[in-house]
Image 1 (cartoon, rainbow, N blue to C red):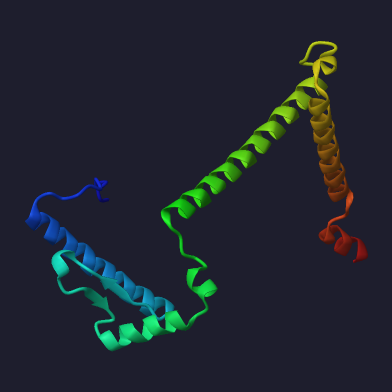
Image 2: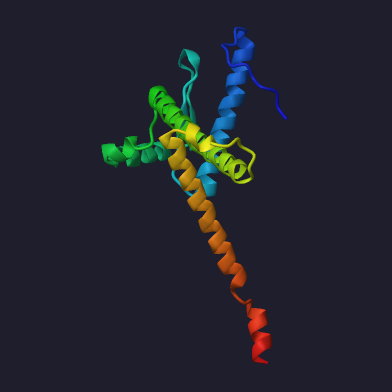
Length: 172
């Protein structure tokens, strides 16, 4: 397993060039693999510092031009459909995190209410405990009770239905 790489500018010139060349060849190899494995036209153009010759994949400039021209012929909406800048990427990630947080809050609330329901049914709460609940708590408790009753009814129906093997024996 590789160690975590600190992302910072490499000051030493020779190390920076060596790292750039290794990363560039790795990236070009991945574009090649993506194109072959998924059967999609792809290209990559990687410019280095000081105007050095760019890294290309596919190696032929004509093939690169074909992919770029095919991209440019697409409608502008299609071209930018899945493009993200840093701001939109972060907005997307924040929205996803907020959605996960809300889902976890709902799950936690459901567990809390279910726990209160079972403790109340088991006589583990002091007398008059319902009087201290808010209207929202009472609604949630009613929902939990209805859900549990529905699950019990479904289990009861499932258990009362004769199994197919029993039916075959009865017919024989």
